[in-house]
Image (cartoon, rainbow, N blue to C red; front, side, top):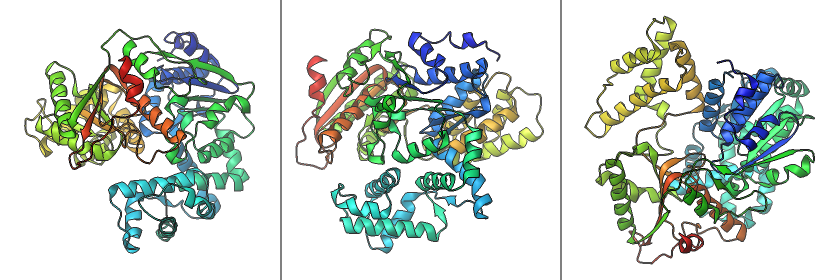
Length: 561
């Protein structure tokens, strides 16, 4: 596709155009939920390339998730831009580490751990410390916070007593287990993803030739979700930039929800102080949600002094609902009934999401949906590209690409998935046959995202890229997700359940800062909804005799619903 520079701007509103035209020097885009930030930055990059301000192969766009990177790459390809590097911070650092490490260390770069939690579990067992799945996640999160905050073990030891207790461990046991984890990792000659950033930063600071190479390679930087950047990632970004300031950052302080991993919105809020000549642009027109949902969500904003409230460009819709129930079982049964009604009315399952605060809340929801015969997927479950049928399909595509035929891409891939057991009609059986069919059907659907003239070779390359980045296709099922994992996603219908004190805000959120972050988390949940939004809470858990109170945040919303 060959587009003229001005054509690239045609799809943008006034403020989005202003952002896209701010090409050189520092630019900060304060983009609220649903304001088209991804569209804006892709069109900005494409506009800069077509105008000749950017050298396509010298642009690095950085994201925080593989899904976001995949979406950004796909949109750039649609605009005819294929050579721009779009990577997560970790992927960009890893590629540099693997390239330079053999040159300076004389050995291949260390490989990355497949599972941090698995190694933590092993060293915990050796130390006779029992950690359940939730405790493992919490402990892994604390390790990540320490490293993202750029704290050595010595630095961490000096402050560990002031940190919230992790996984029920005393400060001494916490330190002991963290050190055991680091020792086991070294013994196995492995690194974790945080180490990748640490080692890359150290290597670039210690090796001027490597640094010069990287700074020559990348000249123009875009950073998405800049409110989520950690001190470690910021230090690495600064090193990549060097003395240059061709940096565009995009973020929303009202969506800062990852401080537990070391993320801080201070870099976003202080961007103007660091770059006094920065071009500051606000995107406040929400194109995602109805007017009622936007107005509803605005009541929870905590940083209106930094960014203006959202203005809806959407349709008039239904008012968000707030429901209460006697028990969690009642809440989940009503949820399943509502979803079944919507599905019977023709709503696609992939357009529905159920959000909650912690993973442990999903069990009761899964039971209720299963009883109602509703297919669902839990974000964070088995990876799509790890499924045997998908791996077999990828191998078949690669083989076909070696000696391609004249068959259209869709027909070629259809023949491949048919040979693996796929059929046009969805099987009525539940369990493994249904899951296999859904995987192969999703695999086939990827072809629809490529250009019409794409070949089987193009498809093979797309699969390789998606597999590396774990950019998974959307499954035809209701999504269950924590609000943290739902960030950056959207659905027509969103149900947010379990809104009680102890869950939201979570029990360990005690300070005003922590409570405000919990409030922002609910704001993120609300702004995932395009058309309909339902909030609910239950007075009593399944295995508890103690009554819960509704989340204090509902008091900010319910009286004016």
